[in-house]
Image 1: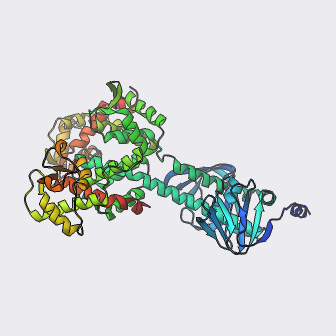
Image 2: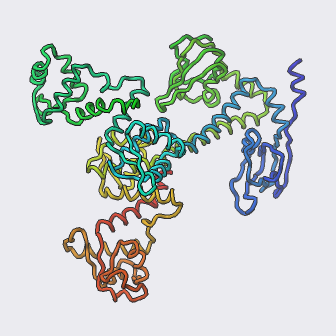
Length: 303
Length: 308
């Protein structure tokens, strides 16, 4: 019985036959509606230039959904190019139909619209999530200790990432506060210098560890490992020994050192294998760890 | 149905055609194609595309907090649609299609917008070293603009198909490394100044430079510090053959002189662009610079087409 009442409230769509040349819809019209082509052919044409056909509709095609459901403007004039039969679903008809639908189906329609809107919005926005890390990456590719005009840096970076200038300025401040960048003035113009791009790279790795909730390798070294690091930094990178040889060498400084410690050091990347099971010091990695420790307060941002 | 913490509603790639409504609790959706997580709380819908299109699940949905879920099977949905006018089904199809178009456009935009970032990183590496490694490039582009690895690889493939670079294993090789920097500058100029970069040459200018290249190559003479000297007579003779009988005039040479790509044998300030070309004994130019400019002008017009 309840269903019957509901059915009575339906406002049926308007099905009409039109002759070729009939203008079905014009952008000047205040009334929004969905136009479904049942039979014949319709053309959407540029209102200011009617000879320009934007698209042609075949039976089964429909237009005006976005205009009706999302108030998006429909910019084209719709005209019948052949004698046609069309169904017009206006706002009242649509509303009456939507009211009868189960709530979840209505929610599906709304979700589809919302997701499309979100996707269109996202398409215009920056895709960068970790803006500070991104700026550090950008700056790490600039020449070190060279004065670079801040406005030009911001302009280039903004173009690359589509981030708003305000966000970029905040992030510049954050890196300057950590002394990873230096700001000065030359002839009244703000200039930026990158003291050491390697520090920016360390900062990026630190931020990545933080995001993943993982400890940052240089900041979880044991006292013993720090001592070995200091020792390795004083040695020539060409020093070549096999595994047991390096273990013996480490044991000279710490008699308790065992194979597990040696494996840990290899995993940290401080040694790299060369010919015949020999290992040499990986100078780049040792320098990386030393820098990370030396500038820990800058990297952590507790300056 | 009730699901407990850690249980899966479904996994990525599975075939499901039901819609799920979260009545209580929390679930999270993860995908191998995205780093972002979706969180579903009370009132959220899960699997609307499974219901509408019967496509394989695009994410893995796992319960975070014990959840009460209502399942709407596809049969229920179909039965309701059968009772409704046909146009409702058309509207749902339209809305679904519209979402996919928006999704595809968004993906395409992200990829196209990542090109300058990729060129920026490649340029920076090439300025420091001849060796450029793929994993480092992918990682740095991802940090800079947050794009998927596949997008970076797609862009590298597009550049590869234009012979800008070759990816071999973990290394990237370049025939003309300076073109990468020129491409970046040209795209940046177009985007920031909203006009065509002076690096982009007209067809006539390109033909003149090609003629000069041909003269230099035919000469077989060693270059001094990369600088080549070409007599006006040789240019004119070669141009007659290679430019289909076209005559090179001083006026046609002028834009190239102004850009510093070729230099007349007389001081620039004392030459008159209206005088005949024969008044200049010879021209000289940086051979590699000319080669790079021609390469840039070959690649640049094809770039947009390759990306889209």
